[in-house]
Length: 184
Image 1 (cartoon, rainbow, N blue to C red):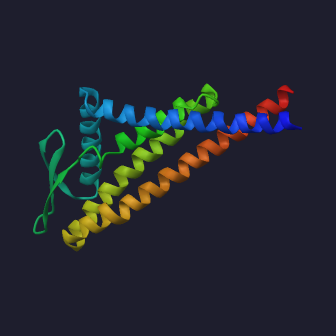
Image 2: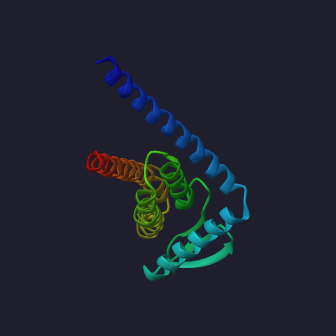
């Protein structure tokens, strides 16, 4: 009887240690990405995608630099938008993938799901957050940008990120336990 308790405790410790390693690797991945040219190129690509979408909702843009553009509508407000690392969806995706890829008890197939299914959802949600913030600021005044982008949008992204992470983890663990059950 004590051996099953010890096994259960070891499993929890193994899971906890794996999760700590995952958090550390996510943090290290983000910090490394921010310090490299690849991270800057990815941030610039995200900015270009945001500019493209804004043009389709009739918000005009002037490209200023690799992370900055001016958004305007004729006769309306003018906003200078700077895509910072903390604002970018690239870093949220990097954290999600680092957490997913570094968990040692999840198989490679489930990790590929994180890359192919969950990561694009996070990136697209962040683009929607920025485009919505700019479009609403163009329609109802620039003071609305801060509220929509910083407070409502950030809360929505954090909630979505949490739900997606827990969904991926739950599905991965469920898949793992069903696979282990078939092996017994």
